[in-house]
Length: 202
Image (cartoon, rainbow, N blue to C red; front, top):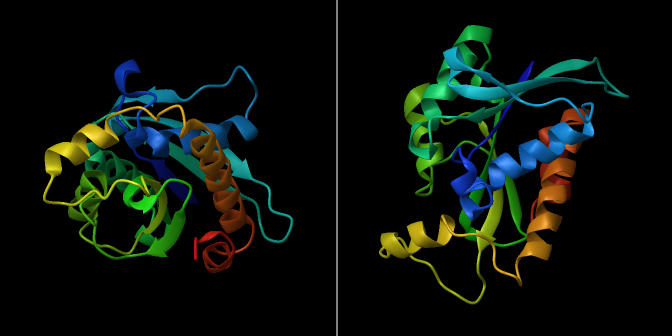
């Protein structure tokens, strides 16, 4: 069983913001493997919206996959991940976190196991809740190549990530969402290491 978590903030106000890129990738993945009328369902005991798919592998055994969107807001993402992972007894290495990354340019992606949060509050919450860093991250770039964003300017960072993609960014955003879905599919079908080799931005 795999738990694939998209990070974001609930509510229409945040739906199209850069910080919700994790939600966008998970939604796009679900649409590929569900009927048009299917939706995520709210599970209050997990403080999340969840959906389930069965990954029908061509090379390996079929595997159940839980898709999760926390309803705790970004800073409380760890609570939702902890609740569901304990309930289903999912090991950290089987938890994949899909999230926006301001330190990567828009259109870039890095898949990795472990490491620090790099200032991402959702990832930091998960680190603290799981008490380990040994879960996988699909880091999806939202940063601007023309605007250097530093940790010293926290207010500017907050304004940036909580803003919507600009007119000149939306095409790239759509492409990286598709690429994120393909990376997850590749990791499910083969291995995360092969997905890293294929999809990580050089």
